[in-house]
Amino acid sequence: MKFPKKTVDDLSDLKGKKALVRVDFNVPLDDDGQVGDTTRLEAAVPTISRLLEAGAIPVLMSHLGRPGGKVVEEYRLAPVAAPLAELLDCEVRTADDTVGESARQMVSELETGQVGLLENLRFQSGEKDNDSEFASQLAEFGDLFVSDAFGTAHRAHASMTGVPEHLRPAVGGYLLKSEFEKLTEARDNPERPFVALLGGAKISDKLPVIEHFLEKADVVLVGGAMAYTFAVARGGEVGASMVEPDFIDEARRILENRDNYRGELVLPVDNVVMNTDSEELETRVTKTDEIADGWEGMDIGPRTLEMFLTRMRVAKMVFWNGPFGAFDYAPEFAQGTVKIAEELAGLDARVIVGGGDSASAVKNAGFADDFYHVSTGGGASLELVRGEELPGIEILDDLE
View 1 (cartoon, rainbow, N blue to C red):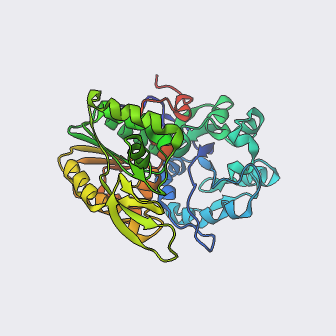
View 2: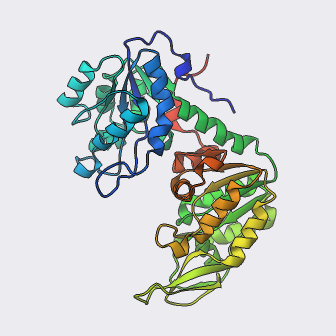
View 3: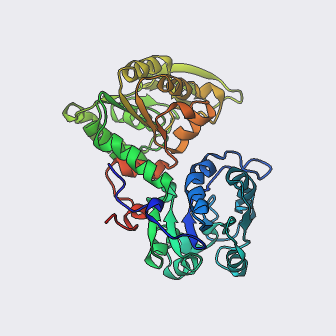
């Protein structure tokens, strides 16, 4: 599906104009407070470079972490400036606040060829509250608005939907356009066989997504901690594994209705489990429905892995969101996720990784460049493939 909004390519006469750009620089920081992964910075470079080449002066705004509407030193955006400047090959100036005196002075002093970076949006409570006054203050920093933060496009926050109420033109960047077009391709026109792999911890976050793909895909493989709620729903014992009791009935309803869906629902049959009572890391493999008390499921088991791999190998299009084990807890629980990533990387298929922890997993495993698309937005990608409208896209200028 073609991106339905105007983009930076529809703008003209940009020389000397300040472009207020919403980017997603919610990057991981290492123990020294430096950027540990520049993926999201790299994703923003094409749009920023396009503006610079046209003579515009980009003023960037982003959030970082969850500071809760107050200044938290460890979440300052200053560490982003140096690696971003290197990627852009230009000076990146920073401000000590978001809309205060430091920000106003920095923006006023920017010259052509320079980039400005406002302080963390979420230092201000008005960001998540979509406060109109805060949005108006941000809008004063630009002559036009560019949205390129797909990771927050599903949030009606001040920087996403409030600013365009005060500032036009309001257009999308290259990242936003690419994310929309590739994810809606999987939603609206998938090549078949179409396989969906859904992992992660919370079934409460994924039940609507599971049902969506059961209606759209040919096969739906479900793993991660959320599979234990399904195991309980069919009468199994899962020991100390994570279960969401409030969603057992919903999981049971899906199981009872599984023959009426288009897609085949495939659940784990065995798991790697951990002894929660042992001070040492003690693991074993057991059937998913027969996990003993004091043992917690941490990864899919070898039989499940082979079952999943067999189903994946016939696919022409794959959508994957969520890891299949606690890959970041210990290497012993990363095998399922890594083996799946390795298999997907070698498939003759269009593989779309739907952001979040699964995107981190494929990057850590060294396979990110082997996929058709790795999304920068977990929640946004899930909402888009379910057919939800994203407010951060809907607010932008329509194509004429």
